[in-house]
Image (cartoon, rainbow, N blue to C red; front, top):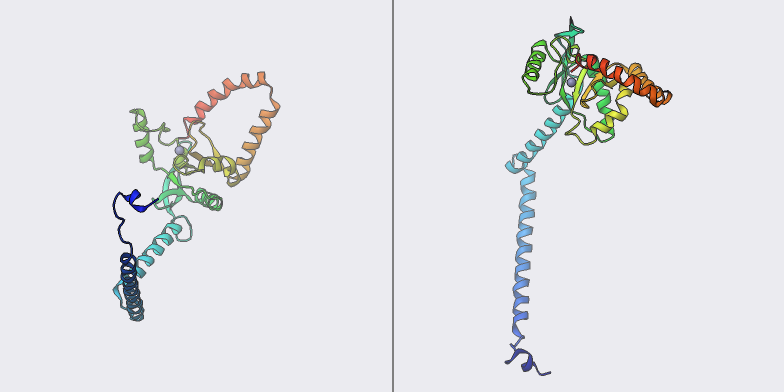
Length: 252
Ligand SMILES: [Zn+2]
């Protein structure tokens, strides 16, 4: 088929364009190459002088990043923690307890609870779960405020001031809704570190009861479940609900 039939007119002469482009491209490539070489040489020269502003800015940014990471890690350790004395309450009785501030939000936690929590946090981290605290020790004033808020219909249910295990230093609220995997990890492993869930409707509320008790509690639960038949379970359910309601009121 003649080309005229395709184009409808004489085809354009494709002779000079590619060669001219080729020349231009070659010139462009050598120009870029030269510019790159100049830049490399200039940078090498600059790197030799210690006071280059761009370099020291980069160094400063890196140093700040490292410092921030170190501070974050230190906030989850007892190494530099300074214990502070607070007035806590256990079953309504005043007692003096020592607390330390944990995490970037400096949440106060009773020291033996803190030790157990940090060990647990390390293990969770090794499994890729970064446990975070939402609440720890509460002063009487803080508990009173939460209690008032709950009574007015705002916030979670809170125990009467003096009756919360957040005041004894044993209760921690751990972020289970915002940290992926936290809830499952805790359900699976927390008892190994002495933590136990005590309020059925609050998956974030964990209490430090020490390892043997937490283990026994979870073992006993399984064993009882196994032993009991359906009828017996039904009969005790009601009684348990009643006593749980009473206990729960003392914990949040
Ligand atoms: Zn709680």
